[in-house]
Figure (cartoon, rainbow, N blue to C red):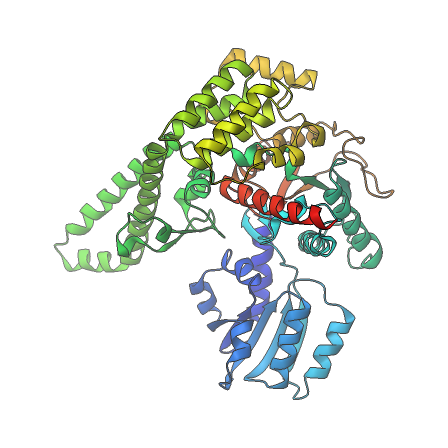
Length: 569
């Protein structure tokens, strides 16, 4: 709950102390930070009658002196310039300025100089510079997420911008939590190292006083890791509700755009909200398997039909009054039933059309089980299958290449060639580029459980016991990392500390930040781990929330820039 609550508290404090009619002015990033935790009806209750973007405010000249302007924006130089212009030509009666992160002294001076008409009532820093999608999962929604894969020499300024934004986001999370962590990073990632060192510099040097919170028994831990240590998880098909919706349809800031589904009628092509904070059915089913979801939705439909039936039986004035009183709740229930039935129906159609059960079984075998010969046969068969889509073929070859990178290079080359002839839309060398980025030589963790004796034994035991569900047997590498932290076995040599701030005892709070983005399979892993009451609370954050489409798009973009960059270097 912690991050969602922090952001909600900030917005409450922002709005409730300013009486009267208000306009809330946001930028392209803070609009996500606010909309994901606060509904429009809640804003109305706080007398916010207008929500505008800072860009459109700059364009309009209409005076609205009866409104008080509440700005909640990132302290970027672009935003400060826009604000400077808007304060020089004020349209609103009062200006209340809230920034989602640390302001520089120079920026404060610019704002003070611009406020010639003395309309600014207050300037505050409220540290909500992240999107808190779920209780233990946040993202920075970075558009240029591919930059973490680019070598510093190719695009130094791009990588610097990427690092600065990540450091800002991590700093805001710890300021919201009122903690200063001990910091560790993944040794094999230059980007993770850079971000960890710059975060430490900010927290322990530049803004040491701001982060000097009351000491807790044991310092929290910030662990900065790289997506490329586990490239398998974002390549897999998903079979639990939240992850599956994102993989097959797309989930942005807890919203699903049903317009993307062409087969729906016009009135169904809307944007629907899937939030564990606002939807009790989703909250109790977001981590459930697809098969169980179908049964649970049937139960929900049955319950709704009972309510609908009782509403048809109106005979007295009292019945009518009861119906009118319960009508808003009835409409809400009807909308909820319709939303979940639509989503599951559409996903079932996609599973059938793309033969995803067949594809997914091979994916899970590649991710979890050995047997190179059988895997080669299975992938070859699926590449020849007309029903298998281009993206599924590419993912299968990538998973095979990651698993059997060093075994039988002739067969691997045959798969590359077959993929090129069956799915020519992909740029040549994309699978090889993935291996260059995230192959065996580059990884720290024991991704396939075949390096570490303990993991080999665990996999054998799991194989003997049998797996409850063949489609969800994969566990992300993050699960092992959390286990290592819980047992105090995260190796210093693989995950060094920054500076001379070391962990005393076991941490009670751990923020794991994944450079390059997280997946909903991993956020599920964190939620399940937190439910075990191990005495440690984990929070997962990343530069984006990935599905396979986004991961491959980032990979293609990085490949394109690396190619053009290698000609220049």
